[in-house]
Length: 311
Image (cartoon, rainbow, N blue to C red; front, side, top):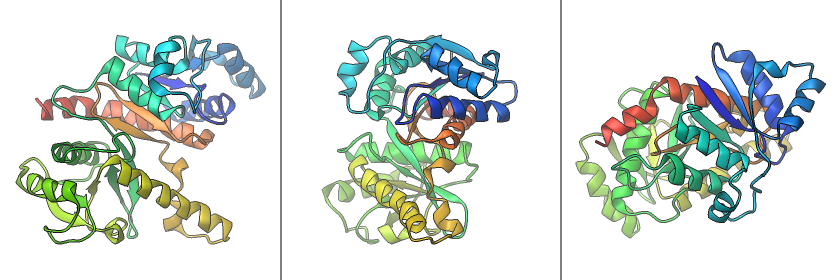
């Protein structure tokens, strides 16, 4: 297996990404990490760490897509950027997964333009992990790919989240809930009111009804679906819990699990290859876990299972 890593993506690239690749290499057995970006810069960092460049494969690029650049324009106008080249390699099958802590929009655009959306899927979704108070985890999607969605898209998110919960995290018969402002079926905005009966009728998911914000970290459900606008607000609020507890000097195992470093990145579900988007402030630990998540997605054949589910 060859796992592609954009070493130019992120606020602390390329040093954090190369250091993360070193840590991932120490864990991976029999797999190759392909470093995509400025080869000279990567070798310089590896030399500082007394780590042999022979442990990696390199694909040299000359351009970088900045965090603030327009995603579509940047992907088109910078064909030799680390993100554009990474997707080219993924499309050609030269790598089996691609991850980056760079421009999220460019990663989403690159996914749809290169490896493309799986037939039958209306919109890809970005997922995140939701820690549970009593242990274990759930999945929340979408958390930013689609600010506005139609009811049938949310139903598909329920299927995508269920397949990921089952195949990557080993959750049997995952319970799916619709994020809403009340438990009752008649609660919610127009989107939720139209989505509820569709989820209720879906035979390929275990829909258990609505979930309120206070249910997210309990044992109410395993997969929570919502539009990307709502999901991104929830995600950013949840991330602040860890930061606040650290600033207040409060140490707690549950709140430690809100640390993005543990999970590495967020998969883009619904495209024809494993693609992971990391946090812009990713440090080496987060990069390492992003690479390991890429491996898990390939080994679980999640993309294949999603494809078969939507045939």
